[in-house]
Image 1 (tube, helix red, strand yellow):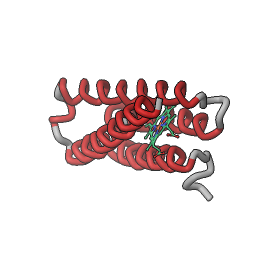
Image 2 (cartoon, protein in one colour):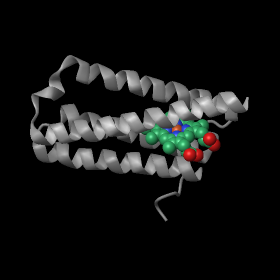
Image 3 (cartoon, helix red, strand yellow):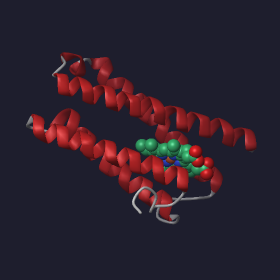
Image 4 (cartoon, protein in one colour):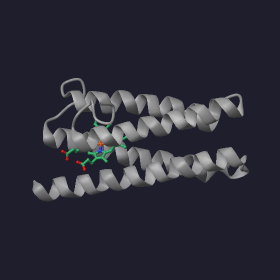
Length: 129
Ligand code: HEM
């Protein structure tokens, strides 16, 4: 049990690190107006990483018997994750002007920082008060 937990947590935190780094880099490319962003692999790799991240999240929650909409800190994580996904997609894809994309990118990074603070403290108020 302890070994499975350790492996899942390593996979979860590792995929969080890769996903967050990738999001910062793609935001940087967006600001620079780089054509790299439109490359096929640039759009596929983040989906693979985020699938690993979410699968390990669900496995960890199941193992620990702690669930979103039951435990406040996981509810906060899931809601902030939705905000991160919507803002991230406006920042990297849907935003019609550069200003909208930049504001959405900063908002997405704030949502990501909040998710990490909540994860470390197991408390939805983490990083706010
Ligand atoms: C972008 C999304 C996410 C990020 C950045 C993230 C980040 C993290 C981090 C940094 C940790 C380690 C905390 C520590 O050291 O104790 C963690 C643990 C955890 N996360 Fe996530 N997470 C995300 C999504 C999710 C989701 C959607 C769920 C639930 C459905 C989830 C469930 C968990 C669980 C159960 C743990 C283990 C807590 C423990 O060991 O006590 N995560 N997460």
